[in-house]
View 1: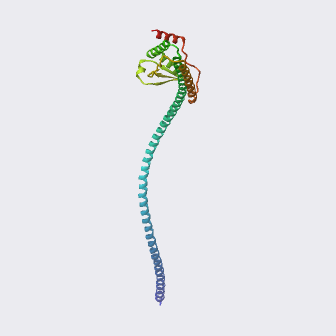
View 2 (view 1 turned 135 degrees about the vertical axis):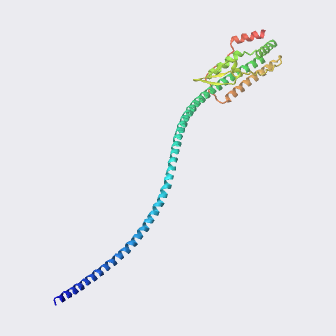
Length: 285
């Protein structure tokens, strides 16, 4: 009888243990089920993360290619920048050279303008001198023609014609050169008379404010004087005088009608006693 409680107790203990094991098994099954659900969730999450990783890897690879292309372009741009810097340095040097040339050109332009101003002044002086010489020549020519017309005797007319012919045949070249030199010097020019300058063209050499030129070719064109008949009547003489006066008046009107030129001085060519003596000697020869 003492063994029965032991068996009952063992059976009840085993039964309770079985219940406990069933409870443990049920709880473990529940836990396993929960873990399976978590595993499935984490597997899906892991798959999504792998897809995200692959997407990021593809994006990174694409960015790597873009970075490589940008690196190549950057290197190309660096080389272009170096070339542009070299070109910029060269252009700056050329700009400095052009500025220097421009300054030199402006200086030459100012010098040329000054020379042109001097030339204009000299040309104005030459115009005034030539006008004065022409006026003097015309006055002397009219006077000589009038003297020839009103000479009373045939001998005086012949002597006059002889003097005129001798004067035409014997021009004083040194005197002509000296007179031209004086005229040019008055206008601000100096003439160098030498043999070499006779063969070369006119050359203008600047020497401060005074200009030097070589000798120009001087040609004297004498107008032939038509000799009139030596026998003239008093009536013809008066007519000739009136013609001379009319010619002088017309010449005065022509001189007044010419364009106004500022005459710097009132110098006139005068026939000196020495010139008269020379003409007398030529006539007596």
